[in-house]
Length: 389
Ligand SMILES: Cc1ncc(COP(=O)(O)O)c(C=O)c1O
Image (tube, rainbow, N blue to C red):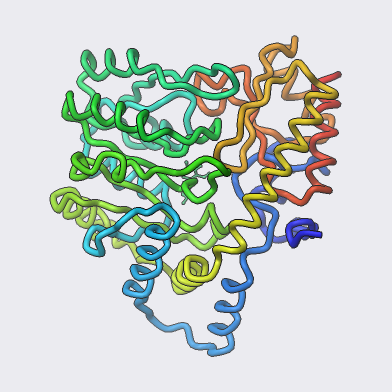
């Protein structure tokens, strides 16, 4: 039995995923397989570090920047062979706020921001709705169970639309693609040709399934590093999203100064003590937990894929190269999207429609499989029932 088989009730813990499901799906008892957090306890070293701090009992002002830098630099070197300069790192509470910071610092109102479609929803919400940038999308094509980049469309848009920034998700959410170094290089070459800086959200970088390997964008193209901002965090990796701790890697001094100016402007409070403890403990001692987790998620994926093949063969399942978010092509399931959604929710599975992630996500479903096998079995059975209805 795996530690991840334990079913830990989350209802009544103010969990967005569980307690928020009733309002979102307008129904009780739905197995929530939507928002990206996991139904697993964080690594024991993190919990032990919290307990130790709680027993100490004093929570005055703290500054753990140096230990956090040591921990994240060692982690990235070991896991991704990625060398990070201490002076390039800025801390910020979470990755979505960092997307906002980077956009404010590098672009102006009305500027055009390029991104793939489908893409993690806050990319276009923050850029478009919140910051009044103009969102330009370039499609990801779903071919042979995975997304492919349309480089020709990307180039046309960079060439003709006066794009001011490219926002990349590396690895890709939704869809779970791990971009190959050649694909990363090609994207950078295009951006370089049209002098466009890149923000690379790498929050899913540790959740890569074997045999795939995450390549940080800067590592693939060090010659363009001054024009790349990388966003990373231990929160998705170790299920710590509620703790709010993340960092930006900004090799350009000019961009760093701009971002820091924005942080000062809003009096950003820095990382809270428990976020600092979590980052250090997870990066120093969480590796074995993470390797077990990735294997468990992959087994969940194979279980779910097998169930679809047996009972809903019209569903095409994307390969899971990274993330714990399955991507299902339901375009051959003969129902309109709204009806399909309602049928699946009524059957008891809380999914997210691909269209939440933009126009090119239409006809797909995103499914969070980071849960104990018993929860997964229940959720998948409901989902298939909803599809068959
Ligand atoms: C690509 C991507 N970026 C950022 C986030 C959220 O990060 P944070 O909670 O640090 O804002 C997510 C969460 O699912 C994500 O998938």
